[in-house]
View 1 (cartoon, helix red, strand yellow):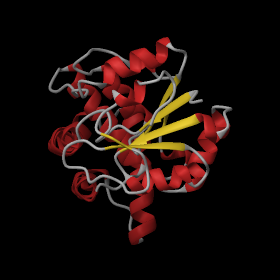
View 2: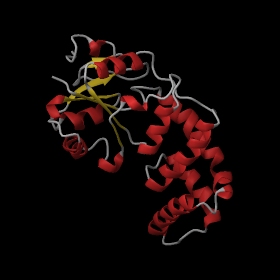
View 3: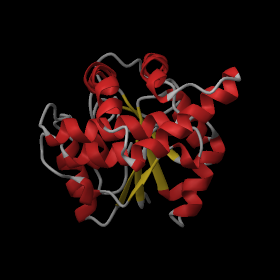
View 4: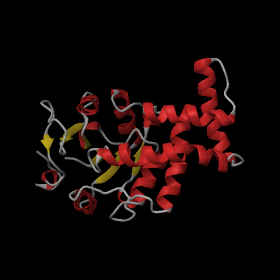
Length: 233
């Protein structure tokens, strides 16, 4: 019996294009002016110092604050998953959400499925490479409104990388459930492989443009997963 459904975001609950074509370009365009305007903000200074530490470690030279926009813009292009960059992007996206510059669109099957699972007592969680802050912002501003209350936990790479088996073992321990009672949904076969290796149940969500897995149950949306109550096939 499935007691917990753990979900990826991009390509599973929303389109991959929202992050790649909306969020990343917004942060990249806004970065320089954001750092200039918030240069005395302690929260910003905390995370820019973390970025400067990384640069110093990698290059041997600590950049001035004014030099950061060029480096961080390059990191965005490279999709580097660094804590300092994620935190700063989250602050910029927070501004965008508050200004209603964009709103992530949930796939049409998502909200009905999540609502029914919750009504049946199934626990729900998110596991994404985006920071917990970014995840909460996204789900607080969807086209269906604030849906954060549907989720019990938001896991990010603080528990480990998504293609690493130990990450899923850690999640299982943190939610106090045996892996066999957890269903992981993702559009990434490598992530599903990692989860399955520690005995998670898995389902490959194959939206348009995703190649179907040959080693995991395949579903075009979340609707079929609802059939038979907690049972999926």
